[in-house]
Amino acid sequence: MGQAVTDAAAWYDKAEWIGVHATPRASMVIDRWRERPAEPMREVMVDYDIPLKEGAVVRAKAVNWPKAFFLDSITPCTDGSKPKEKLLEFLTQHQVPWGTETKFYNTVRFFDHVVSQTEKSRSA
Image: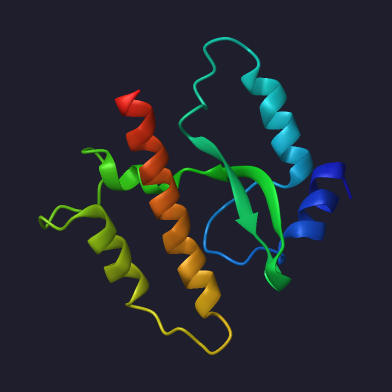
């Protein structure tokens, strides 16, 4: 197997959230790419302390999926609902089996983090 597949296989079941994140190695590759000027990925990926099972975290790149709730062209909030309200609507459409509740809470926490960071950068 190639390095990317081996790296992904080692990390695929470690996260305790609903989201897409890079492995530590892939995060470093993305950082290297972002050193180039005018890199368009800056708002697509965010740095985040990814919650892992057993309570640990790893700093890595995460796909900025909350951004979709705020872009007019792709927002799911077409019924007048607010972004967080719509996220919670999506999450509550699913059962939360015993032992998976933290995964759901961590997902909402990521959403709140991205929204907070976006608001801070806009006001700066």
